[in-house]
Length: 498
Image (cartoon, rainbow, N blue to C red):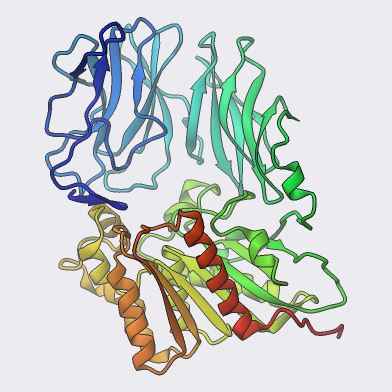
């Protein structure tokens, strides 16, 4: 893997060192031709030191080639150096090792299926005395995101994405009985457990509030209160409908500031990436619902087939079905929103990034319901994406093999093959350092739009990767995207009551 995300990797390895505090000397514990810990299919911290300090657990991609498989395993390293001992042998991704405080258990997260980076993350425990491995989340359909041990080693607190929120679960050990400790509101992460094993400190955020520290369901810090005081921030409203395959599908609706139910507002329809991802009740500098709404838009975001947090079967449904089940969900979800009395269905725009950018290109060739579109870092040509992305297993899994072996499916779901139907004005955003979805995907889409006479603009960042992270660049991104929407939807003058 000679490049990854936005990092040129050729000739570089990361290794695990031990540093002696007394004299500052450092020693490489992993003098091998591998990245330790792994750089791909990594977890929430992939180095853990045993309580007695004599052993270190790491997640490492042990194969000689790493770009075409997800075979990450847990290895044990003696503190004083020596041969590494492999703990896991499954061909899926194993990561995030954590020793229990009493030293009796080594926990880790595990994906069962080889080559699939979005498989269900199971919580596994290995008994250090007998080597027996057991799954603590057997029978569950959701994934463990991150986790931490209780001080007495009798429980684990785990962050679990669930229906558009991140809840905190308590899992008792060794019974593995689970219960919700913090839930039903926003996104709750970064858990720290008090010595009593019951009091939790964690970060809480929602659509109306950036991260603050909470303790036992009580807000402890108020860093953002002053900045938020002058803003008209409205909570997300959940809605549902029957989507593809007859399944229940859910989404969010956000109303604009100074909302007047007697008026009709233009709509911005947001499409998430991944594709195995989800719109959650979160606050972020990128794809912030409230900032889209601030220009006078109703915002809607659907968690279509492929989204996480609704069970693994729902997540699996998008693989090899990029253009049918999710598209059906999105159109049916749009039907629901377009019928709302305060939405002007003649002024609707859509925006998405990564897979969401792919879906923007796909919709451009399949519907004229939108007045304008925004595609950020989207996949335009599935076959060229397979040849230019760095994590090769991704396209192999999503399209049933390489483009050399299964070209028919690549062609079936490639927006390139439907570009003759493009009519909707489109803003395309792409960045030079995007090694996940190569810059050439954006160039191809822009070239096609211009040659077909479709109104199009290209926003290029020479110093960004798959995400726009630098504050000044973010300001440019937001200004360009919102101005483009305004140009075609004109939200500054919502129509009167019907």
